[in-house]
Length: 92
Image (cartoon, rainbow, N blue to C red; front, side):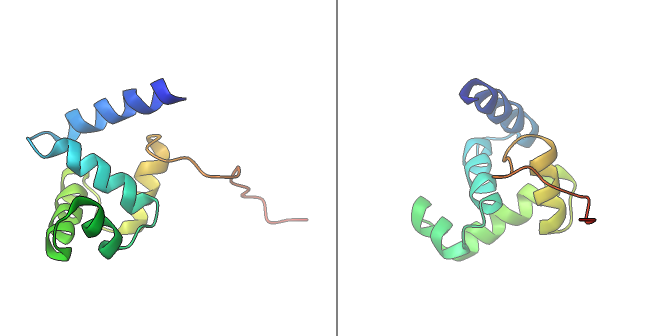
């Protein structure tokens, strides 16, 4: 699993591009883990505004416009995985 995560990390860093790509990936991962802006800002020793700018730039680079699309993208591309298997059949 770790090697798969590292591969995905490299793939996303390449996709995000630029000097800030590694930090963008880590911020993306924290966003997808439902961390708050304050938690992310504290972890990276930056302002809330800086986190908001990263968030906006990540969505722009990945071609998504909402956090739901960002979550879906992260799930599709293996940045995060659900804790339990998703069950889509609602019939009992």
